[in-house]
Amino acid sequence: MIFTVTFNPSLDYVVGLDTFREGEVNRSEWEHIYPGGKGINVSMVLKNLEIRNIALGFMGGFTGKEIQRRIKDFGCYTDFVKLKSGTSRINVKIKADQESEINGQGPNISKKELAELFRKLDTIEKGDILVLAGSIPTALPEDTYENIMKFLENRRVKIVVDATGELLLRVVKYQPFLIKPNNHELGDMFGVTLSGREDIVRYAKRLQQMGAQNVLVSMAGDGAILVDENGNTHEMKPPKGVVKNSVGAGDSMVAGFLAGYLKNQDLQEAFEMGVVTGSASAFSETLATKADVLKLLDGLKNKS
Image (cartoon, rainbow, N blue to C red):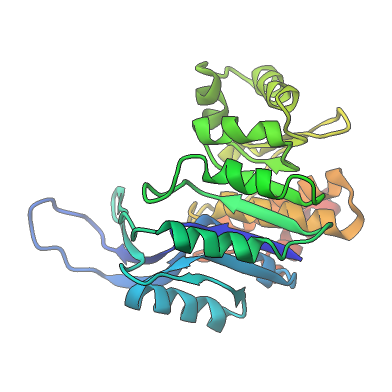
């Protein structure tokens, strides 16, 4: 079973207009509302790829109920901790001549409610996969990811961490199965500017030396590089297409990687599936569907 954790899920209110005029009344041309959060995106793409998973996290108030309703209506299984007070956040995303975002802070989470999440995590067994995605909200201790990985340390659970900066550096000692920084985040972690492929591979291997098993580095339009646990380096350019929406592309890459890996435990196959699935989301107004992914995969096979 695959479990995803989203500590600070949201309702994403996406508003489209030609031009955003600061300080004036702006009227939208179109609007969409989606459940948001990196772990939730992973769960939804996995569902699209027909892979059963359970989304964990926290939900509060009327927004939390709506997030959970939309995820369930999509067909995903959820097991959120219901917060006694506060409301899950609303993120406003403005798509105009330039893209702008206003992200909410989210509710407070008590020690008792965090302990309830750990009780749910206690059901995870050998062979399961856990995806920890996104930042830690200010309401929780900074070492929450570390505590979760320590809690599951001897259960032979494959843990995927999609986080940035110091948060990611602190957890690699627990030997996560997969981490997925982008090239800019990778450089920032070590205080350097990466100038090309050799630098990316060098610092990905540094993360391996620190404990990570597989390091998947996304590079937007330049594709991705995987330095795997067997010492192999894989590179791939993205399929050709028109980018319509970059939100969720990285999460889709994680979901695609896991979907590919579950087929034959082949890391090259997982890598290709990850890059294609991330691209399929980038080329769509919403998250990648199985049909989108298969179409791009067929294109790669025909090209080769």
